[in-house]
Length: 183
Image 1 (cartoon, rainbow, N blue to C red):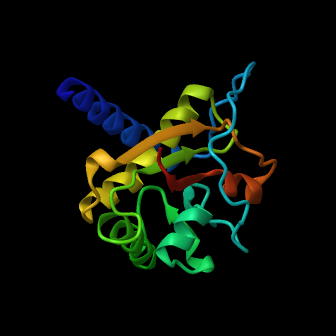
Image 2 (tube, one colour; image 1 turned 90 degrees about the horizontal axis):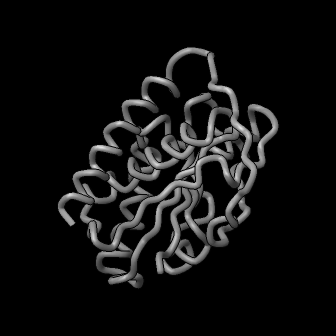
């Protein structure tokens, strides 16, 4: 268990360093590698999108599932918000605090939360999986710092497997972390 945790921490540190170095600097985007087989999409989540996608080419977003929104009493506009790289804004922290409170002492107490990181389709498969994991781990780390139980927090990546974007605005929507109920 400790070895697996150490490996995960090392992978997160590498992913964070890679995402900071590559996602935040320069205009060069790694070429896309061919994906021959795509796994089934992640568990169903709302198709609701914000009126405006994140502005920055390195910005990502957090999208909270309808199931959690309803159980935790989170307003619709707050269920999807941008964050720049791995930095959450103060208003975003307020929403994450509501989610953590809901899972720690509210209606979803004892349930598991699943954070799924995504990337836009530019870049290779390995790069995008690492970047998606970095995004999910960033939100997980923030939640753990607010009191979420590590044993009840799962983060994973789908990379660009579910990406649908074809231009800058739609790629911005592909760069996200989905917050869902775990198994």
